[in-house]
Image (cartoon, rainbow, N blue to C red; front, top):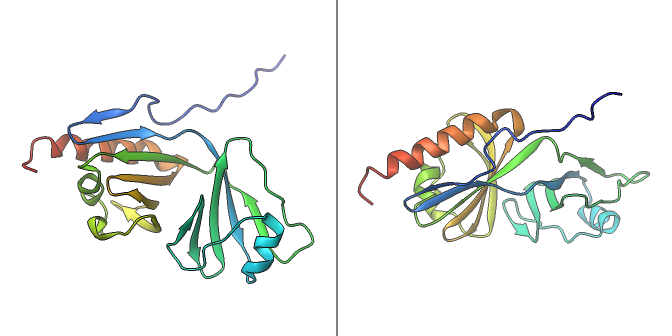
Length: 174
């Protein structure tokens, strides 16, 4: 009898706690890439309320471009596939994982490797950007709370870079 494959997480399950910031692996979730030229049709097909402005976040849905959205839901959730309609609803749950950064030093840790002016981002707001050359989806959820979505293959590197930046920050004046 064959063993059932089990996916392991490429980063530690335990949060990394530093002075001013906690970095943690978010719970697994369902994710879909949504594409459509007609946002109203996509809303009808999926039942979601879509943000219209790039970077805008409505619930768990982010507008990434004029015809592109990302939506998340708890693991195991489903979404209609849009078959027969001029929309694309693609399950990308296993492609990426999400890290959370929270605490008063969270923005400074992200700024250590991100060219965006993280302190000035409104919230909620999300945008594709890079962290030391790796493409990520950075979302500011609150004054001192961020999520970073990264492709699974880059997750160990990103975890190391973020935790090293946080460790380095402990030795710098605030």
